[in-house]
Image (cartoon, rainbow, N blue to C red):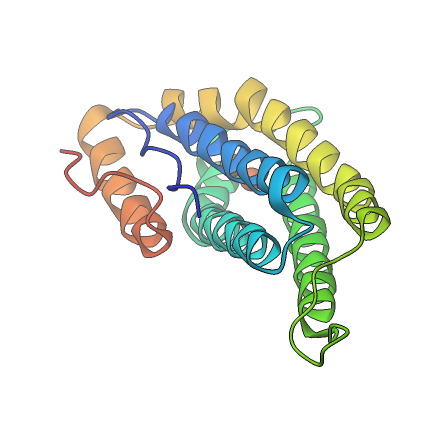
Length: 188
Ligand SMILES: [Fe+2]
Ligand SMILES: [Fe+2]
């Protein structure tokens, strides 16, 4: 199985959220590339599923950071933003979580299908094509959501807090991100 993507570079600003987004996107791409290159073998497919699981865990941790820590502050400390409200962000998070759950269930279903000899099976080429097609919606929502946050959510958070408070908040966020091994724990 290929190694996970490298951790993002250090940052003491909310732009570190954008680095986390890059890592999450890279995680999904790593899964898709592995699926296309090796997904027709039992062990190649299993490795591709593990990469999707790592992507899903990282995305869930990041959504938890935003839902529990950053969006409540965005709602209370930042001026209202057209096209980037807390409600829109929360709704997009719910949609992303649902799409990840559905894809994990489909990958599990394919892994459980018995092969000809009764052992584990690999998906067919058509099933792999079907997986990539089903992931299109997930990729699109992820991309649009990232653009929305980069344009408004992140810059507004950056404006709202002075350095000391920003560092404290980011430490709080990192503690959640680290659970998915997303960020470099040596950031200071
Ligand atoms: Fe985000
Ligand atoms: Fe988000």
